[in-house]
Length: 545
Picture 1 (tube, rainbow, N blue to C red):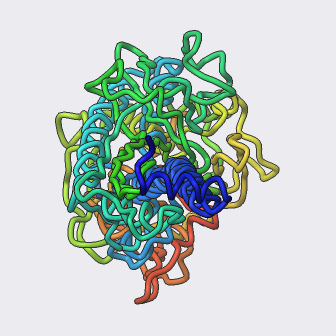
Picture 2 (picture 1 turned 180 degrees about the horizontal axis):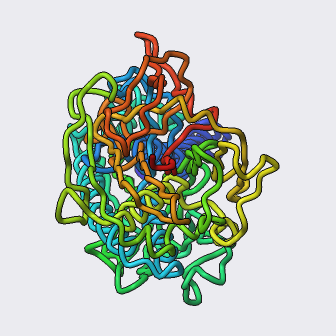
């Protein structure tokens, strides 16, 4: 027997009155399914949205790492990236901007200088390259520590203009500003969940060139690709470890699945591959229409970039003959081979401490890797030529350097005429020799904290012909830390002169005028020798009287 209420419902159903009721139930079920499906779609969209946001965060940090610059006490301004002399915070005491060397450029230059010293079989240059290697390791560690500290919450660095760079804060800003908000106002970054880590990964590249020609590069299989050093591996030379961090021409996303934190050569590696991780809180509707919350976790990696500064004018080596050509010096290599030059002692090795000379006085000094104030001229010439080679960087053709050492000095001037020869790497990395007339009555200055060496009667070519040698090195101590007024940069671009400038010693130049270094405007400027040829080192022969 059907109860009375059920009976009425049953009768209404039989009469078709229940159709709206059934339809309502059906629509309710369909609506729940649709809402649930939309939640699933929104969750799927959230994942893609978060992936885009976390990639933006990692790219922002990688960009910041490429911008951070530190002042190394030996090399001057260094970074993951090269930079031309345009940064307002890099201004030297002479009001010209200094350039920034990437750590890869520094490492590659030291490694190349070691190779060249071996090819020249020059023990003094080998010792100097070992000295620079020790300095490079210190710079490497200093930069690594700076980057690791900069990515921490509240961490920071500075760029070439002195602007504060905040990688962690920029990661959060990039993440939140790149969220499309498919999830509505209920989606948010979980507080404190952003994590930034530096590591490495296989399969990446650098844009740091190996030595040219590659036959002298002393590389094993897999240590280079397309003419560039491979990153994150020990590319040793002469038992010295060289590890190059990965950098590209542009900042780019890297494969997060390959990210690692313990590189093969841990003690020598700068970890610069950025990994950003974050959690996002998502409000969504479940199948019953109830509001729930889910945590989405995601990570992404990015590789920093390195701007390549080709240094169009790294600085020339000037070989000058005040009284015409000297018998026995017919090519550049003779400076390192002539027995008289090698054994002749230096009467004086001097540096101006208070400013440029003139007008600042010269003070006796002991040069790096030497033991006293009167080293052999051979050792001083090796040091000076090494400093010039180092100035050419890591992107020049060593075969052209060897030709410069071995080819005859070429000039159309009479051999008795005062003349000079300039050697410098051009934009293609080839050492080019140029010759011109010399004015022996005009001298170049001595740069503060650099040096001048004098060796009297250094060569004897005929019964009555003796020659003194004057050496000036403008890039002996590089950088604003130790390099003095001009940060160890080449001399050039001068328009001002002063009278005299000689010391009065018979072995000195004793010229009638001396050019002065230019000074930049109060607002700072690009150094003239960046765009135009300057003198990195000068070696002058003058007849003794």
